[in-house]
Image (cartoon, rainbow, N blue to C red; front, side):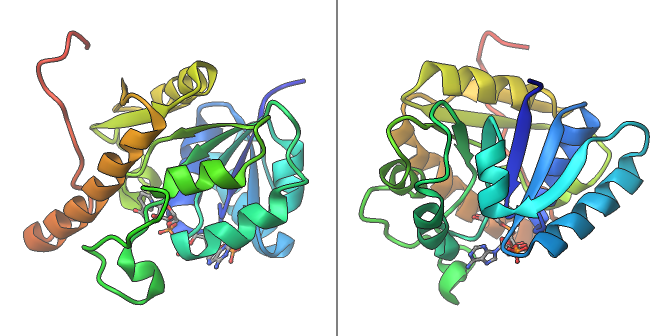
Amino acid sequence: MARKIAILGGTGAEGSGLAFRMAKAGEHVLIGSREAARAQETARLLRERIGGAAQVEGLDNPSAAAACHVAVLTVPFSGVVALLKQLKSVWKPGTMVIDTTVPLAATIGGATTRLLGVWQGSAAEQTRELLPASVSLAAALQNLGAELLAGDAPVDCDVLVCSDDEKAKQVTFELVSKIPGARPLNGGTLENARIVESLTALLIGLNMRYKVHGAGIRFTGLPLK
Ligand SMILES: NC(=O)c1ccc[n+]([C@@H]2O[C@H](COP(=O)([O-])OP(=O)(O)OC[C@H]3O[C@@H](n4cnc5c(N)ncnc54)[C@H](OP(=O)(O)O)[C@@H]3O)[C@@H](O)[C@H]2O)c1
């Protein structure tokens, strides 16, 4: 069966941008939402924008999670625990999850440039606790802004991929490579997501100080193109 990628919270800024890039690259995308009708509307708009044979469907989050091979988590940090508890018995063994979430204080009304303390160490490590052991996890894309994803231009940034599962890391690398201008980098184990998530708060501050919307990260000195 052809691979299906669910974007949970795919009606939002980050999720719809990722859905756009994935569907444009020929992936079959399932937009997930708390309301199926909202997901269907986002899917319709994306099909219209991409045209041709774009494969984008809209479903409620549990239906999208149940039907996918890879799920990308793009809901605000404040909604993650409830969503993952709802999905606990829904996942098929072998599903792969990519966590993009950042525990910004803004998610509970605080500053956009500060992080909340997370007991587990990072949003990604909290997600790990809430997924069945049969579901693998990579943390990535936390530093790739929604405005860049929504446009047609190459994004021009590095994407750190952190995971304790080699297959999840490999699949995430492959998907990130489908976004023009994005270079996946091996960010090491899942616990390094602590560092990567905190960089997002720094990038938001840079966006504000320089009055831009697309600050990103590039690493130099690596033996890579
Ligand atoms: N925005 C960025 O530039 C950016 C960059 C990197 C990473 N991220 C991460 O991506 C995630 C989403 O960011 P965003 O800016 O796209 O957020 P958003 O637009 O505010 O929310 C995304 C979607 O999540 C759903 N949602 C909202 N509250 C929810 C809740 N309490 N429980 C379950 N679902 C909820 C909504 O969809 P429905 O109402 O349709 O369910 C919404 O459209 C965040 O964790 C963020 O840290 C964002």
